[in-house]
Amino acid sequence: MTQTASPAAARSPGPVTVAALYRFAAVADCVAVRDRLEALCRPEVRGTLLIAHEGMNGTIAGPAEAVERVLAGIRALPGFAGLDVKYARAEALPFHRLKVRIKPEIVTMGQPDLDPLDAGTYVAPADWNALISDPGTIVIDTRNDYEAAVGAFEGAIQPNTRAFRDFSDWFRTEGRALLDRPNPPKVAMYCTGGIRCEKATAFLRAEGVQDVFHLEGGVLRYLETTPEADSLWRGECFVFDERVAVGHGLSPGSHSLCRGCRMPVSEAGRKSPRHVEGVACDRCADTRTEADRARYLERAKQVEMAERRGVAHIGAVQPPPED
Image 1: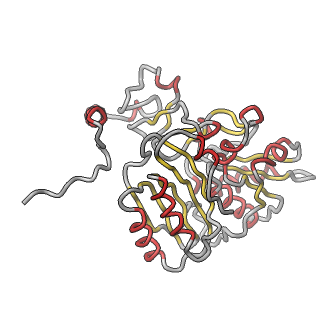
Image 2 (image 1 turned 45 degrees about the vertical axis):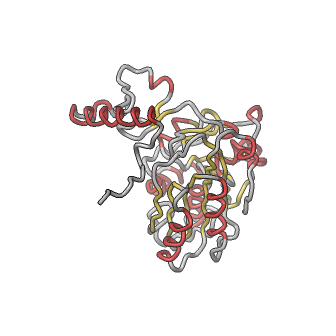
Image 3 (image 1 turned 60 degrees about the vertical axis):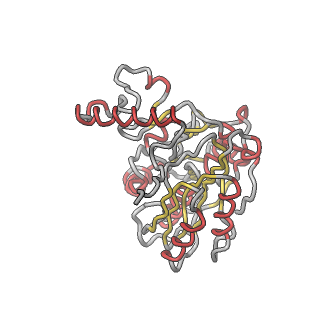
């Protein structure tokens, strides 16, 4: 599916364009693609792009014209004309650095013989409510436990995995039992942007499950296009950048990020006496030493001072030393 514009990008405030993208397509020369993308991104675009022989995945941000330059370069690659892109806007760059990396997989499942192109059936956001409201459908969240705690679809089954590579073990030990009925249910799966649930449907098909579906564009496109009054989503959607979480219309969410453990912190969590901004939260407070706390606190102070001066602290490009 190709998306060249986004209603949310047009109506949302903020000077920075954020583009989440992925596509499963054969990449013959990963090194050449990496070098090309690094050149296209610099100097304005930041974010992360992962390249593997199975395709590409990532999120980038920067001025609109610079982001479109990178996307045009990706779409020009063989097999990438149908690149799936989800746009949002932000007040500031949600990434500190640019990382373009070559990986064994663009989303790690640890199933080397899996064909990600043999995936289940796409379901458009406009048709998703009807599918998951069907009593003959079970809904499985393919994201991780900390993401599901921020928000999820009503009634979704939570594998409570710590990483996507754990999903296959969960299905083989627990998930398959959900299908052990005289009339097996349809399986509807979802994730943040569509990539994990697409690969998960390919895995289920390889395991012999045929009646399997996944949300096209993931939760992000559902929140972008579904009116809140009609939505079956509850909570916010965790995103892997400095926005932390978004709501309907991809508006900024209420969660912040713990700098100690990199996990999302809710408004209630920030009221905990164990939460120290920039240092620790309820999740990690007992695992941090006094030395850790002192180091994190100093880092938080440096970041705050940089913000007051209006300069970047993390990811700043330093000028070369003078002779």
